Image 1 (cartoon, rainbow, N blue to C red):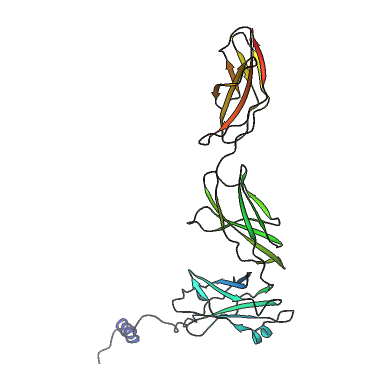
Image 2 (cartoon, rainbow, N blue to C red):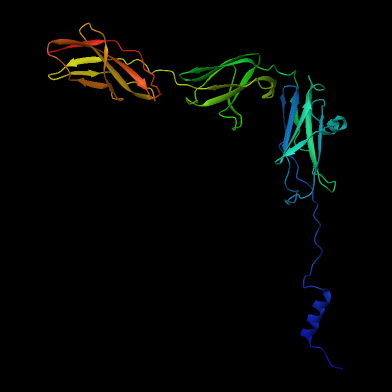
Length: 330
């Protein structure tokens, strides 16, 4: 009988196995959704607002491509916290909304006012598996904080001044600069008034105010937002009256110098002159340099001078006149 060469026999053996891989079968993926780690809740008015990020990956760091289920619950338990006792009595919640990877649920406070509510969530995959409960979020529920009222906006030189009425441990001011922008927190304070010094003249600003009630553990219950108010700022505020004006007679002129104004929108100064006891008339207009040489003079006459400042507004805002000084041109 003819013998088959050894190399050919080995090749035939590999072909008979179907492939060249030698080893055990791959372990199937568990496809368990990652655990939620950022569950958070805040009381806003008569609602508890709960939110968390929907995990995009499994515990094996694979992208989740099948629908998820969310088991969100609320309950209470004696201290110290016991997760098993909490689970025995926690109530499932419905009405969860998911948008752009963020899940949100709003819960009426009626059944929880005066209690410490504890929330937890677990994410269940399409195969019914989950990685366990999220971080637990405890929140002490209080009666709905009162909404601030009588919000008033006042256009001032230093910015928009806000004032309002209502009770609260603190207040939060929320602002946007146009209807297309999102609202942003610009101040949190414990008084009933505040001046927004970051505004710019000629721009509209929209404001709302919210009261905050301290519920302990560095947390606050929030009121609903006040009725919005808006104001378009207008620069109707002149620069300060110039000071330190001095007039010195020179051989061919009377030299005027004064202290420099410090306003950022200063455009310049106006020089007023009178002859003897006559009325003041505008003599000249200068830039921001606080000096002027008057050469349109007659020998032997006494002249009085006063200075105003003006800004870059249209039309310009002009200050009152400085204290007058006089000098005689020899």
